[in-house]
Image (tube, rainbow, N blue to C red):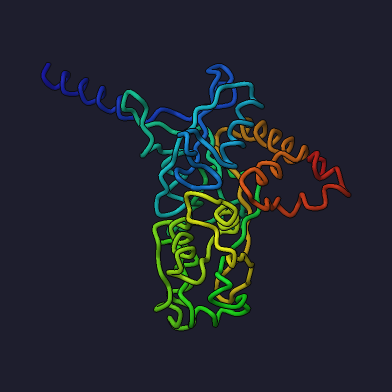
Length: 314
């Protein structure tokens, strides 16, 4: 009897510790709500504004996805882990970090701002097995790229990477620009590289004159550049530029969304909604709302001359 009681207690504990499951298209329709994961404190994509309300380009997209499915939106704020692989594990198929009101681990139905890249999607792990077999990545909706902000009062427009040897540059910790500036060219840029917890904090250092340049994602720098308050007074000599750097890797990349690999029907429905909002210009308008020169993936750039691309018939 004692063994039976122990077994029953163990089964109860295990059942309570299992994560709530992400839902299929039919389940979402039946529940009337979709859980969409977005990154926390990540302007201009997903953040809370001065009134404490969700704001950003990905928030606009999340609202549009829920509206397109005819269901309510349940936003799930993600705290980024070390890699995107970790984030997809935590928020799509394992559910380590999300918790519901009753304390259970919860997964999201959809995750936004996921790299859309064939090489990344078919990556193999250390054992040679598919690293992302439990995740389906789809619907690219933005093309992002690296850019720089600089103070023209301190320096001329950067033309080569040699500028990093003579002027202080701010970067966000644990990012490609930080890795590049601390390791490239035998570490020649390391002494002038100043690391900050976030791009906005690096940008404040630019406006206060502590650094002469900031390197980061173009959309973030554009948003900060046009933001008059809260991030420091806009300097009249503050400029933005794009510059290709040797050894930096890819200068631009596409971003889309992801669901659990079992829920392709949901992915198809969401992709149709994304196409609709690309077609009607909403993504461009959302970018303008946040001061971003929104770049669509390359397949949509010739849409005006080839409308079949917009309708998905190719």
